[in-house]
Amino acid sequence: MTKFKAAVFDWAGTTVDFGSFAPMGVFVKAFAEFGIEATMEQARGPMGSAKWDHIRAMMDVPAIAEQWATKYGAAPTDADVDKVYEVFVPMNEKVAADYADLIPGVTDMVAYLRGKGMKIGSTTGYTRSIMENVLPVAAKQGYEPDNLVCADDLPEGRPGPLGMYKCMVDLVAYPPAAILKVDDTAPGIAEGVAAGCVTVGVAMSGNAVGKTPEELAAMSAEEVDALRQNATRILLEAGADHVIDTVADLPALIDRLEQDT
Image (cartoon, rainbow, N blue to C red; front, top):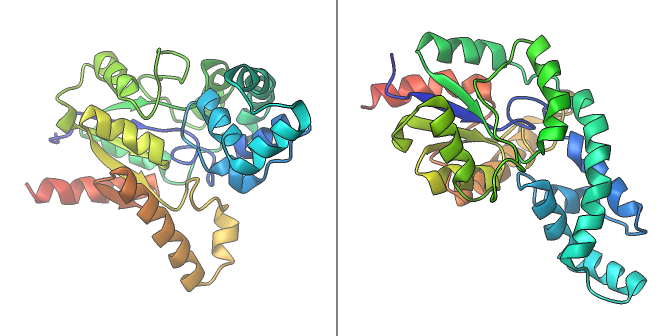
């Protein structure tokens, strides 16, 4: 047994989709449908948020807002966000499953948690319609968490705590201090902080680094370390209690935390 009763994981960049690539190109393409040029860097900025909020944040980027105002005669409104969102979701539904490969070490990590009697929960910035395409692909690879809370399941998403509260109810796991929230994005970490959970940032497989394992392997140790330090800084500033490279490192962290008590 362990002092931790559950671990709640994000999806893209944390348990699937090393580098968090699935949404990025779709955001760029969705904006292009409206004649707006968005960059991959701009698309990565709000990653981890619910996708409507993500598009709103992109709309507020000065370079995008200026393009929109020039083309449509006014600054982008929430109604404009709705229009882009309606284009984005079907696009992401189509591609999400193509990027649903498990991050190396997930199944061994899950076996470790199960062996300790821990529940496994999940939250995501994806809508449920997107996740319906991801779940069967992950399951075929051996990853089936005990619950799933999507961005459109509740009245408010990240960085608020409601998704984590729903996990506590679904998993019958409490108090918050007995729950690990594992995520690769600042909004996802903030979700765990808001709920009072122990937060674990995932640096190297996530959005802040945005590289495939092959790309990382081709880089120098100094280049990789620079990426690690930047991702770690982002996660710590969001409130992460601990930062690891990937979820494969979670068992060692849990062992260390248990020894410290």
